[in-house]
Image (cartoon, rainbow, N blue to C red; front, side, top):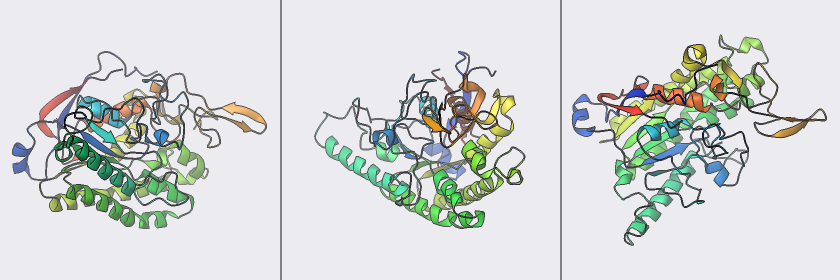
Length: 388
């Protein structure tokens, strides 16, 4: 059993400043501190803090949210996501979903446009979610326009919404692209999925340029993780053991993910030369996650691929017919996908998403700066004080 992350002594020292721009001579002048007034996030279920649930597409039942929130929080996790830990590191409140108006959400420190099931490319009739990256960008512009109008009416709403300069000074974060790749494998060959990557990234580039033209200057971009290591994909595509790698992950999914990341990295490098006065930080999530799965015991985990919440038992504990927290009839019998006793022993939560314990590990690795390009400046260390 791994030592729980809620141990009171847990403090992570990390390098905290983004390297603004690609030129060393600009760093001294442009990154005096790691201090953003607001964060605007775009993505899929990896960073969705309640958007899909607020849109009415899906409800989430226990044991989702049980580890930290005590009940479902709109997150596809037992607790907090990577974005939550990053917000915590910056001493900022968790991001409210753009569509969630319940409870008078305070949007002053930013807003989250991410929705589970989203893709970078435009949604189609068969898409899991209509809120593609392009639509999230449109929602951002609608939000910014509304904020500008409210600010012009005086001080009534100022405590609840970003100030006008927050849009140029804020951090724009992105964690999206997984669904563009994973969904295609169900009806395309590996080569066909790989051939679609330039089209996907062209759509992503278009969105980034629109944000830049509207004043965004600080971009934080996660690459995609090892898709082949998700129990969902292993269960469907791993029946032929020859398709698995040494970690029992689906090799072709990971090959395409790495190709996507290679081209995404190249895009970030290109845009640094085109976006004058901007910072673009590329974060290698793939390497962090794959290393976690490969070296799980070193980091205190006991199950690298088996889902904590699922049905079917080892080795995957995943059955697509019985999603986490739900009951279904199989062969005339009612069965329920239940959560495990200790989610801190598991890397994977529900067959598709990571546990809070894994997300905490991933966030702590991100904040070392070793997995980013450009790397963090080494002069502004800060502490994560996780509220376990």
